[in-house]
Structures are given as structure tokens and as C-alpha cells.
Image (cartoon, rainbow, N blue to C red; front, top):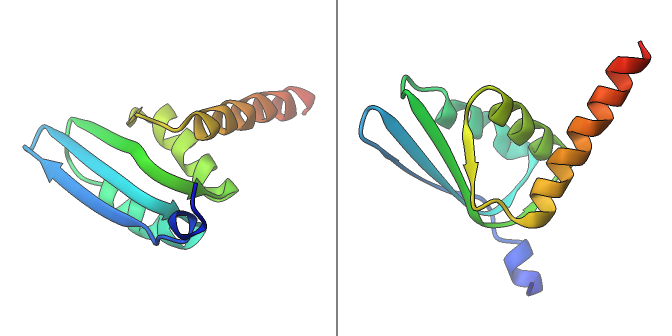
Length: 101
């Protein structure tokens, strides 16, 4: 990845037919972007899809948001492998911590 790509601010593109909403996330997603992301994913569509194909960088808060979103029924497609692995690690750690209580 070129350094400039990692610095690209988040761009959000959205398409909805009333039943299915697809949101394309492009560039770097930071915790500061989460309020906007939450607003974008909070609509009355029966099906919500986040396309992460062009995501270049995320932080821990974003990974937790993506994990929770997926658990709540939002579909993540074309998720970069490192993001998918991080989500799985977060879930495994969460299960371990809840098992210790």
C-alpha cells in the first residue's frame, strides 16, 4: 500500500432500493467516522450491506463497530483479510473475557 492511500479520508457511497441498502466504504475509517457510519446504517432497509473492498485502514473502534454491526445482521462483503482476522480476534477475546466473569 502506498503511504498516500492510507491517508485517504473516508468516502461513503450509498445505494438503496428501499429493501436493500449497499454502502461502499472507501479509504481510511477512523473512530471519528463512526457517528456518520452509524447514521448511514440506521435506516429502514430490510437488508444492509457494507462493501469494504476499498477500505485501506481501520482502527480498533471501527473493528468493534463492524463486528457489532455484523452480529446485528448487517452483511460485510469484500472485507480485507486483515480486517476479517481482527474482527475474529476481537470476538474471541470478547468470549474469553465474558467467560471469566
